[in-house]
Amino acid sequence: MAEKQWIPTFQYLGTLEQSLYLTAQVAKHPGGEELLLVNRIPHCEESRAFFKDLYESFLRRPERSDFLEMFSIHQDFYAVFRYNEGPSLLDLYSGCPGAAGKRLRLLTAALFQVYTAAGDLPAAVVCSLLQPENLLVDGEETIRLRYVLRPEFLLSGAEADLWGEAAALVEFLLGRELKKPYHKALRAIHKKCGAGLYPGLPALINDLEKAAETLADTGPVQSARAFVLRKKARIAQLSWIGMVVLFACLVIYLIGELTNRPAADAVPISDIGTITYVAAQDEDGDSMHLTDPPADGGAGDVQFSSLPQAGEELLSEDYIVQSGDTLAAVCAGYYGSSGYGELVASFNGLAPDAELEAGSVLLLPLRDQLSQYLED
Image (cartoon, rainbow, N blue to C red):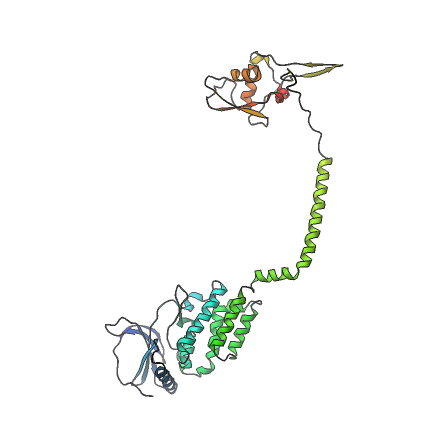
């Protein structure tokens, strides 16, 4: 590998990760605005092979925007990437919150971004990018990559681990669904991925997109709907039986109501010919005597055994009080006798000598219903 033997000057802004085998720092060139991610890796046999692969992939794709440069200083290698900021999948989706469909879309977008941006980079880089903390997502669900290299992939056979890391990402975003029995397609994809049976990430992405199309048909509501469709004939039969039973109960209830109905109350005779009110009705042989209250007597001329209570359910007519009206005058004009004043006052919740306010509404019970309150 051709090593670049110069020491670039960086202004270091902070350390993201530091261990014996890796130091990842955010930096920028003095006077520059672009943020850089500088990965320092000590010289060793594994890291030497890693940098050889990284350098060759850089030469094959010089237009790569995220991978900027690499160099070595003494006993350390350095790989420089463009630094992306933002919340990661680890920050937002630990514990699988939210709808499964959204998490599945993010998973396919993340795998596609890793494949297109780093598909020909060393397996150690790809495994590092498959970590939830290296997959950034913005408010529009756009996936971006953060190239913090993981030392465990540099120092071990990362080629054998790539599908294991992909399966771990699937489990991280869809772990809740993988535990449910009706998500069979997702469980099959997870097992196949963990076993390394996919020829490449595009095949895995394709299976996940197919699973997304059927995800809406695998929830508990859809399972209940499928059960109803399977048992449609039986449910229809039970529905008819239920309707017959309900109709029979309704018939029995109506028969019981009609047979137990009490006799109708006698209706007082009123407004027959010139008779305006039935105060009392006596039968003496073949004769009948009808008595009206006096037409223009005082309050004492009409005697009542009781008075209706305010708001009692009697049929009444509304009378709008005029200026100068009194209870006696209103009753004399409506009933033909001022003696009804006390009864009307009681029915309206007023004192017998109450003064009426012009414009108020006075309830006047119908004359033919007042016989029950007259003295016999």
